[in-house]
Image 1 (cartoon, rainbow, N blue to C red):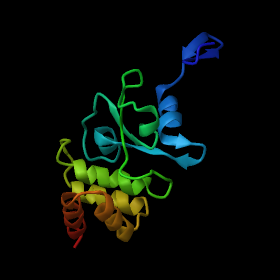
Image 2 (cartoon, rainbow, N blue to C red):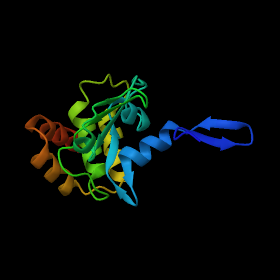
Image 3 (tube, one colour):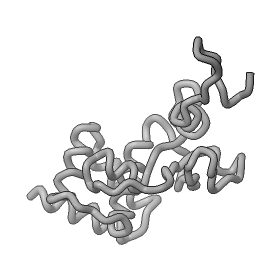
Image 4 (cartoon, rainbow, N blue to C red):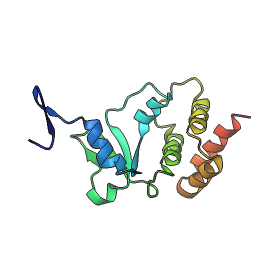
Length: 153
């Protein structure tokens, strides 16, 4: 049996690429080592209807395999600003959205509200969010985060 196939009653079938992506780039045992970003994640949370040709993944294993584009899995791998963990991945993921909001067409009526709802639903600490933004992202991302928070006033 080939590594890319699985035996079924109907013969060999390809392994689901989402399973390979999850186990290669996103999770190692019970620890989060990466997260999805870009248009695909923005679509998942309701900011855009756009679907990108490639899935964008930020992962700790970027340095180990040196791979930037995996055409077979249709993913683009990016280096994280810091080591991705269970505790910080959602903070980094939403900060990536804020940082790249201008690069992906946002067609939601109230994008700031959607981002704030994600922060609340994910039970993210606003102080930690500000700290991660300040430590790992540029001033523009920090400014945008402030505007999003101010839109709630």
